[in-house]
Image 1: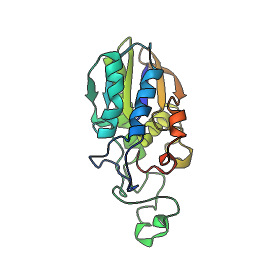
Image 2 (image 1 turned 180 degrees about the horizontal axis):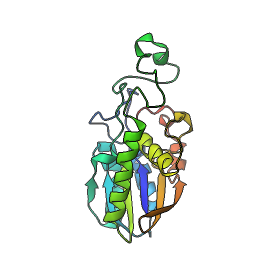
Image 3 (image 1 turned 90 degrees about the horizontal axis):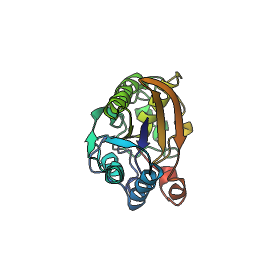
Image 4 (image 1 turned 180 degrees about the vertical axis):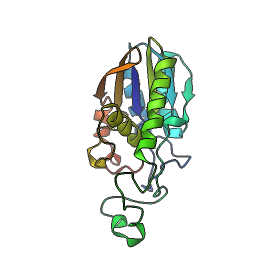
Length: 211
């Protein structure tokens, strides 16, 4: 089994879409979310922990590495998706989507035109999923990534269209999307939110930018 984990809440007082910008780390609450997620796997047979190279993902992996007595590996295939609006304040209601200067970038929601193609995200995430499965052969792995890549991977694995409404993603902060295998064959996908109670106390989770 490979548990694909979204990182915890990020310290982002400017509320920008931080994407792949370095230096964005977990908030104190985000660290608690990561710890809660690791506790949810207490008793599991995890022998391999890997994460996106971005700080927030590596931090989220730390309690898992401690709990299971392993070193955290890094995999570039787990990184956040590219986005034209990286570094900008872009949210519903702020006028950015009505600005004519952005219309060309927003012309195609199916590829999408504003960032890394969904098919590219799906391919690299599927590669990372199976790489983690092989590393933990006969055991379990934890792979820490980001919201859009995880959701794209899940839709790809379920045979669904990759384009979607971002508001309907089932991929909360510090959530676990667990891929069950029999040998190399995917036989099921489970989803859980071990940090749900902490998310409910967050003042920024509902307005979080980036993933």
